[in-house]
Length: 364
Image (cartoon, rainbow, N blue to C red; front, side, top):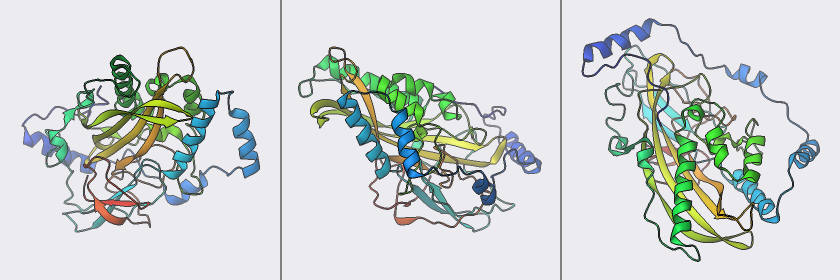
């Protein structure tokens, strides 16, 4: 399932064609301009008073089973505790010797430092091999990297039930991170269709929210999927690299035993500003979640999935746009004031531990 192609001719091994493309890009005007901080503030949504907000939320909530209500409560608590893994990669541009902080977060509000491009700046990769020099070069291509393990009985669940849960989880992970429409900022319909009815209602009702909680976490449920801000990002080429695993166990949730499928995947996206090859970079998305299977809607029916986001987030993205979308921190982005913290971790390591709000990473 491949997203938008690069839009340019296939260079093959013709290095001269590649260099001509880069030279031409220097003389073209930018097709996308990062909004200034003052403009972003003018467009911010006016806060609703807490009492009004609670009342509106209560009126929006559908009638739910006791199990579903308990799960939604857990969902809100989980959303407050995590903003995804907020990653910041500290690098140095070779051309101008400018120190750069790549702030990254699926859903946070931190502001990265600016990148000041020089006349000798070069893109992070060439079209012939967008993953050269990174661990992603050895990862599988696209959905082939989301491998369903062999099934066996788990707890009181049969081999057939576990197999079906694995397959449904594979479809959810694929829809969340590889669906072309979702990646390009469109409605995440492919993912929403797979959710149980009660969770789907919550997901869709919160997807257009903006702003952050008191703890600084984005309020939009669009953070459950990988979705680049519309018009800001072009995925280069036809390949997204994928690496990770899923596993099955049981857990006690809402006074019942559930079949829990744990997922831990890395998705590597080669991107650029639309039509601007000199801005090429990689975004490394950490996707960690639990999918709990039980008879949520139908006590006598089949097991149904309930998606619970875990830690995770994209290395290489801005953190000052709390709208649920990923805004890559391209070369030339406006300067901001907040830097990384903590001991840098490698975003290519599955589920790296982090105990700080803006975790530094070593590379993208």
